[in-house]
Image (cartoon, rainbow, N blue to C red; front, top):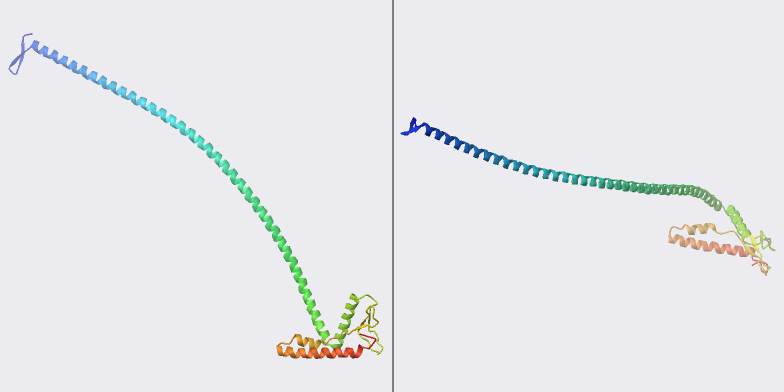
Length: 255
């Protein structure tokens, strides 16, 4: 063991020293390996603890996510139910509004239709009345023209006046209180004699009138012409009155 194996830096290295050095190196190496293994085990333990902590944290997060998902699902379900209820209420409200609007529109249409029908009926009635009025005006115009033609002739005018006077008297007085073409003591025959109560003298009526003077006065275009027409009418009226008095006024017999 004391045999010199080699020299190192001028120092003789024996077998025992070499073995001791090797043993020391192995021991140191073992210590280093032990420290390394402990450190590795500690690191692994730390990593395991960290992994376990992460797993616990992940599990907690997963539980939170599951809880949030459940809450979200419940809220979504609630919102879906609320939306479905609101949609149903909205559909019902829209349906009721449409029904009400349709009903009002139907009533308005019926009212408008009735009003239109009534208006058309009244319009048709008025058109019929207008047609009748036009026909009446046409007939009246024809009658007026015929009357004007009749009155333009003195003999025809006299006959027309006599007929109208007889109709008026017959409609307004009782039978026996008047007489047409009554003969007087002087031989004259007035158009009508009216017998008044309490008086034996009849009231005589002459149906003639000065039409030409009346027409000229009514149709005078200027004040000057109207003045002349008025003078002529007065003159003709006085002449007619005097003629009637001369013919029919008999003292003690007529009035």
